[in-house]
Length: 370
Ligand SMILES: Nc1ncnc2c1ncn2[C@@H]1O[C@H](COP(=O)(O)OP(=O)(O)OP(=O)(O)O)[C@@H](O)[C@H]1O
Ligand SMILES: [Mg+2]
Image (cartoon, rainbow, N blue to C red):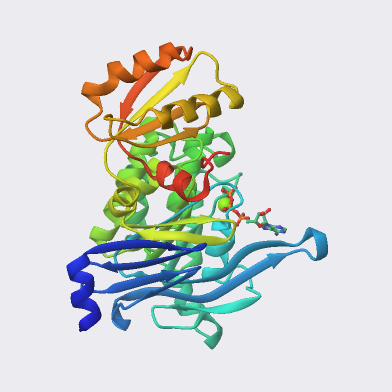
């Protein structure tokens, strides 16, 4: 195919046309994806698609109070991949997920899951194939940990022996062995979150939709959950997750859709998204004075300090200024002297790699948490 060979030659080419992103990408499976506005058209074999959504649109309220939560969302998720939606609060992640599984009626658009349309009377079959892990923790408060899980097993009429084995495995995977007999209402927030996660997995679903897997978890528990999710594709599962945690999206997802104001801004593998904003090390400066006016002034000063220093980009994130430059380390002392001459007092400085948050900032001018 001509397009394929051109695409292979250029490998990866991003072009920003007005406000639309048009992307040509070749993946190892020799598919091409073209992203235009909120439409992601991918050539993926029909039999490889776990879920396909077309034109999903949802708004709430009317008149001045109208919120366009999701705008014409179209995408395909491959079987066996972990697909992440990364976006700030209110970006439309939960609304997208709910429409995908039929928990929320879209204003427009349709969904196909494993080739089936939920509207065609396949609901019961699909219910067994889909596992939903909601953002709001949903447990039976007066039941114990194991009773909560058995409740689900009974609801799905899972054979006792199979259910016992599965429940034991899930309890062990989440480190809940000591809490088997604790009432859900007496669990700590982190343990409740872990139980919430496995409640959606008792019936061994093929497609798992996880809305924010780790809020409220301490770093150690987060890693336990991350490892568990990361291994799900090895068991043949497909996972769609939402998060506003850039590291979570990066570590877990095979592909990430960065979403803001109900629209996908970019969609690709995390490594390619990060590469798309440029090469170089990032140096993060914290200054003693960090009101927004001062930060803007220092940013301008740094932008002017370009000659011979390979400074590629300077931007503000939160109360820090980030500078991206090639081979920065030997040039740091010059930059620091220059800042000091200009009266900017550095409080802290750190060199780090590009993150998905940097990608989000480059697209929107805002930090994920803003
Ligand atoms: N039932 C509802 N009624 C009115 N507005 C809603 C409703 N559900 C969502 N919204 C609005 O739609 C937008 C998208 O909300 P959504 O919950 O999908 O965002 P999100 O990306 O999941 O955010 P978060 O990271 O906070 O969970 C927000 O502006 C939200 O206020
Ligand atoms: Mg949400």
